[in-house]
Figure 1 (cartoon, rainbow, N blue to C red):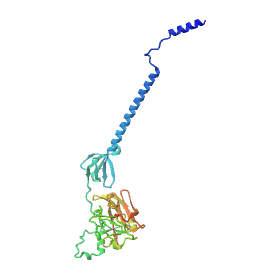
Figure 2 (cartoon, rainbow, N blue to C red; figure 1 turned 90 degrees about the vertical axis):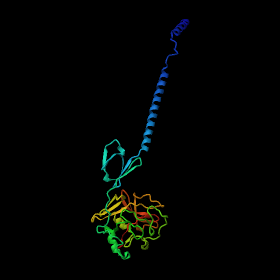
Figure 3 (cartoon, rainbow, N blue to C red; figure 1 turned 60 degrees about the vertical axis):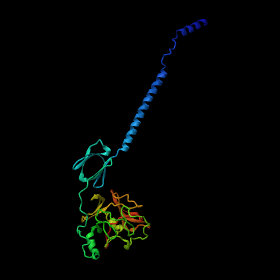
Figure 4 (cartoon, helix red, strand yellow; figure 1 turned 120 degrees about the horizontal axis):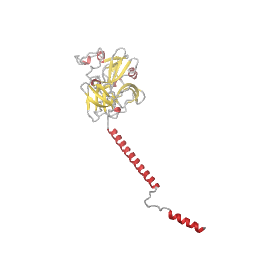
Length: 329
């Protein structure tokens, strides 16, 4: 019986089909398919990543055209067309969106992405002066020194919310700037020494004055005027009686204050301030001294910019600012 079992096993072995060398192993097929899929996925991911990086680089390099309106607002845009009376643009954030139109009379300038500029000047406005102001020659008197303070005041001020404001900034000590838009000269607090707004002429910041109130003898205001108090500056911010507006007047950024009752107007140019010998905020901020300190080194001052106007209490005495004086009554 054992012999029969051996024969059966041997016969079975002889009938078994030999494994071909060319026969495909299923495990190898699956491995190759997985490898090819993984390679394709890596290639697609790499291509997408490079495309995203290129798009990011393009977005970083590309810049918008900046349209500056007469009210000081900036529009990031892609300018499509500049016509005789208006311009056509698309929003930079939606360059495939609709086109918009602006009249040139509403635009101050366009700064293009390539660095070029188009400036659209607004028609010259009349100088902002008091309704009763006469355009007189201050030297018409045979003796200018005999001109009274009352005469000077009546020709140079406008009343806003009960305060009589000069229509122009202080220039050299005892004189006014040529126009309401002119910044005039700058002064350190309680120091009667004129400084050019650019800092030219050897401006050196000092420690300022130890006085608590601006000394009358050191006040650079013209005859009959003085540096305003903090409360007088705050009177311009009384929204029940005064409106304030950031705008461009005769090509100069600044703030217009209007008395709601009388309609009287004053314009204060955004002349900036000198700090460490540099004026980096001209046409962006307007800073104006008050006559009183808040503490040993800090002074109350008016500050305005595109969004609002406020009276602050941390103007360092060593900074140089313009002065818009009031009538000394």
